[in-house]
Length: 117
Image (cartoon, rainbow, N blue to C red):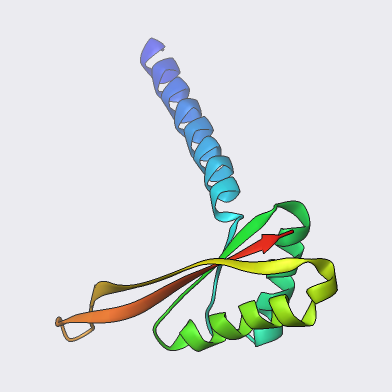
């Protein structure tokens, strides 16, 4: 009987740890918008909603989505000049990824920080 109780306690502890990780992870990723293949205005809207709650948001993209990330940042900074948003630091880099055929490819990355003034 005590063995079953220990297993139940371990299961409860694992559940709590998983929930804590989810809560911690969501607060960390809340200040980042990853750009993909959705329509441009979806990312603009998402970034503006996050900027309403926190003072700084980072837009991240890699590969073919870099141009879309730049477009999102320009729309926010130029079209909403009166709202007081500005572009902060811009980081360029590359990541080594393994392609489907097993070869290593370098993929360009960009991080654009948008600040609320």
